[in-house]
Image (cartoon, rainbow, N blue to C red; front, side, top):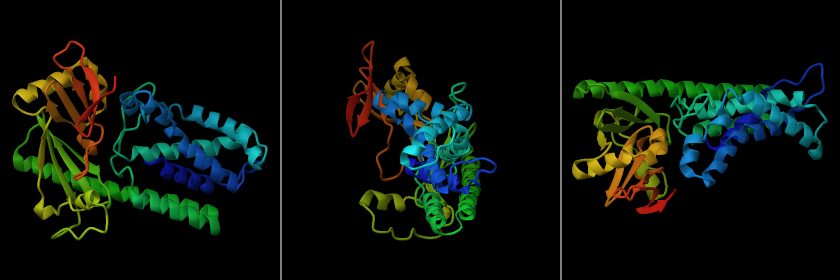
Length: 348
C-alpha cells in the first residue's frame, strides 16, 4: 500500500479511538496527527533502497512491519510523541498516553500491507517469510477513497462514530475482494482441469481499476500460465477513459470470462538460451533475487547476460518492474545487474 494511504488510515484509526478515561491524554486532534505519523513510520525502511536495491526488496516490509516488534516500535514512537507534542501546542503527557494510538496505527499499517501481494514479514526477525492475503492492489482508489472520504467527513460530523464506520466500510471492501479472489482462483482450477496439468499451483492477484479485475497464475515446473480477466464483464471491454496510452492498454487487457486467453511464460526459456538462463538463476550471486521472486520468468538472454522478472508485478502494456540478472556468465565472478530499459546497470 502506498505510504499516503497508510498515513490516512492511521489518522482515521486515531480518530476512532475513545477519549482516555481517568487520566489526561491526547485529544482528538492530537490522536489524528499521531496516527497519521505512526502509520507512515514502517515505510522508513525505504532508506535501504539507496544502499542496495535487492537488499531493499528482500527486507522491505521486514522488521518495521513485524508483529513481534510492534510493541517496541509503538513504545519508541510514544516516547517521541510525548517529547515533541508540546512543541506543537499539544499537551504534556507521558509516553503511556501515546502508546495505544501508536500501536493501533502501526497495526493498521501492517494489515494494509498484508492484504496486498508483495509479502509482509510478520514474524521478523525470527522468520523472513512474507505473508500476503492478495486481496487488494497496492494502489487501490476504492480503498484509498473510502479512507479519505471518511477522514474528511469525520472532521465535520461525529468524528469518532464516522471514523469507526469508515474502518468498517474498508474492512467490508476487503472482505468483498476476498470473495472475488476466490472466484478468480476457481477459474484457474478449471483451466488446470481442462488442460490436464499436474502439480500446478493456482493463485489470483489483484489488479488495478476494479475489484473485479484479476490476474490468475497457474504455475508448473517449467513456467507459468497467466490470464487477465474481469469477473463481471460480458461482451466487449467498454471504452477506456481518457488516460495515457499505456494505461488505456491496461484498461483493455482484462478479458470477459467467455473470451479468456491464457499466456505462457517460461521460467528459463528454450534451447541454448535456457541453459544460459538456468546458469544465471542457479548462481550463488543471484540468491537475493531468487529469494524475492514469487513468479520468476526469464526476461531476456543477451550474450553472456540473462535477466529475469517477477510476474507477480506484470501489468499488460507496462514495462515489468524488478528486472534483475547476471552479466559476465562466462567469467568466474559475474556481476549482478538491473535491466533499465535494455541497458544493464551494475548493482554490485
